[in-house]
Image (cartoon, helix red, strand yellow):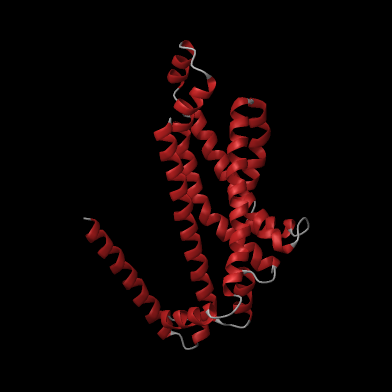
Length: 251
């Protein structure tokens, strides 16, 4: 079954690559749409540049720092809102505002507050925070009240309740938000770099490729960003699953 699913995914990818190739061949000007072959050639070319890995490291370090900070802050704020009802009322409008305001507006405003090299960190943090906060808060609200009542009757310590009741039921909500928000962190972080243009960043590379109509390089750097986002998501979720499994074993 897994073999058939793998073949189906491969077949679908090949079909879309063929459509992409045919669309590129139909264009009279190659700069309008680079073909898959041109994209691979551009990727090999940019990967050989001396600052290629430096750009990836520059962007990844800031985006991931903002992402991890948002996971921690969102979880803590959700717990605080669940304990203090007035805090939830106070934070609700701000969280809704962060969800609704366009990313570009945040980026332009944030340029007044921070230096361009730290812009992607702040934007990733601001985009991920409301997702994590909302998901964790919902997980807290879905905790079985009858189990909490039984724990109080038997006078189970608060620390034991946290590990045996609260965390197991909140953890899936946290994992889901962590998975969904990783891609958002990369998209918003790179968008911030395209506007802020910090030196030696992936966003600067995208802007330069667009400026000089290097569509192949534009697609190549886009592929790098997508791959980096996927690898970070898989790696970070693997760590979280390992952490959850170890905690289950030691509980």
